[in-house]
Amino acid sequence: MPVIQYHWGFNNLRKSGKLMDNLCINFTPTGMIPTKEMTPHVPLSVNEIIEDVHRAVEIGITMVHLHARNENDGIPIARSGIYAKIIEGIRDFAPALIIGISLSGRNVKEYKRRVEPILLEGDLKPDMGSLTLSSLNFNRSVSVNSPEMIQKLASEMKKRGILPELEAFDTGMINYAKYLEKKGLLIPPHYFNLLFGNIASAQADLLHTGIALRDLPPNSFWALAGVGNSQLQMNAIAIASGGGVRVGLEDNIWFDSKRSKLATNADLLLRIHKMAEANERKIMSSQAMRKLLKLQNGFGSYGRLLPSERDDVYP
Image: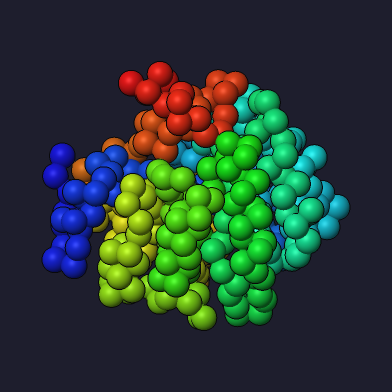
């Protein structure tokens, strides 16, 4: 099916394989910022997160990006044991769903703690781990990602067969991904979350978006995300232009730009489905996205395929 294409580079993106006919939905239910005081709808406990993902799967998603929270106080925590419980619960009902986990540097600074969640194996192994490609400031916090930290995380994911979920907030971060590819730490195909609208990063507009898409390395698949009120705008641009969307309460707790109605994750996903239908885009299945990203086929086999396995699994 034809995809709407704009003069600032989408024709070239289609030729390089970066546009997708079907819509990849990357669901982000929790994040690190929302609390129950901010919104009662954010899932924080293991069971709440599993239930929200279950509902999301029923609505239709392609992948999920998970954050773990401390069961007692809801504080973000990088503990493999909590991630294991969440992943186990999700795979009970969605054994093929692509699962990514956060390796954020916002409140965890030590490499040993940040890398812990990707040491899970077997049925608990995540398919992807987030890799923010530089340090950056948010409104009230900082995410510290030194070159040494980024490269160590990328190296460990490569060794363990986990696909980096590349997070770029500006074009400098995209350029750093190209540098890591030259060093052999990143191997295509790539998956990028392009997150715009943060006060200290690229803004949520067509010009910033177009430049970022132009600068992506070859064989990259991408989703647009918007911070706060920018979420809907960035999702709409992605749906109209052949990209994927990242959507959920992690990035925005409000349903409307006037902030008069708190959203649920289901609210946000159902709206994406309506927008996709209006643009004649079907929702991409996890199995189809696994094929594009050269991931294991799920159902007990998770993470990246070895280069020698790719033609055998996806001829």
